[in-house]
Image (cartoon, rainbow, N blue to C red):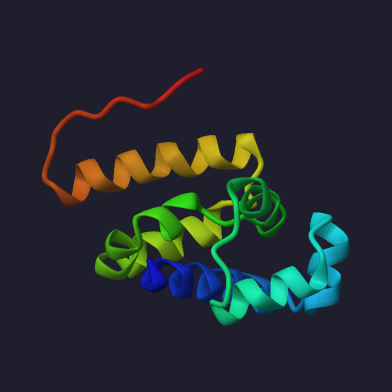
Length: 118
């Protein structure tokens, strides 16, 4: 269990620092006490879901990075791509999806492809 606690702490810390936030700013944004955030980041506590959830939401962390850490480590480029895309609008995401489908079909030598439509 300690490994998961350390992973969670590292993910929270990296996401926070990526945004340029202090622990105090994260506390204000998430409604979680600063001392709790400090303990989580140090891997000193195993927080409840009710504590993790607001942190994941406010930091816009893909929960798979926390709960399937091995996959994130095995495919870091996919997770980096997710980080780039997570702030896209729905319209932007749709355009990128269509371009990605075309690119993948072309790179795989497929003759046909289907654009996703809503």
